[in-house]
Amino acid sequence: MGDAVTSEWYTNLNKAPWTPPGWVFGATWTLIMICFSAYLSYLFTIRNSKFVIFVYTIAVILNVSWNYIFFNQQLTNLALINITLLTLVIAYFFITFCDDELSKLKYLLLPYIIWLCIATSLNGYVVFNN
Image (cartoon, rainbow, N blue to C red; front, side, top):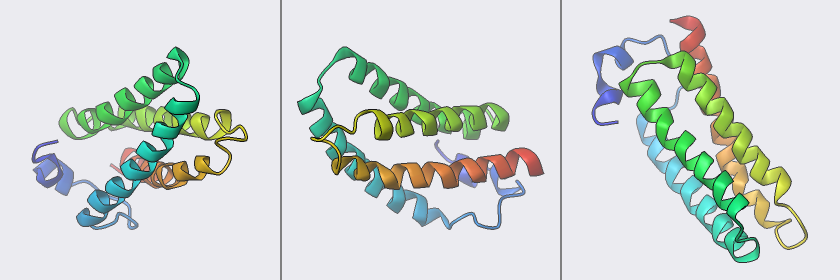
């Protein structure tokens, strides 16, 4: 992202009143990645298939590309589509890979899903109010 968060474009956006302070994003993503990594390490141990790796790859691409699309390219509509797709992919992990061995570990995905819902609402606010 570089300095995109402090850029004139971003600072002048009409942002949602529930937009958290900047430090919350770093703390939240740290927690999310710890939980997601723990979940994935167990998932890959149980189901190390090409399909699981394919779904994971899609999630990584969507996750990384959102910052570029939103902040660097300022394509907020496309970013909203991107983050919605990412939310669906992570929800797919939660719903699909939840057999007996993963039934309790799937809850490690909840911080990610909750945050994606918040981030989607923030992105949507920018789309509809700017």
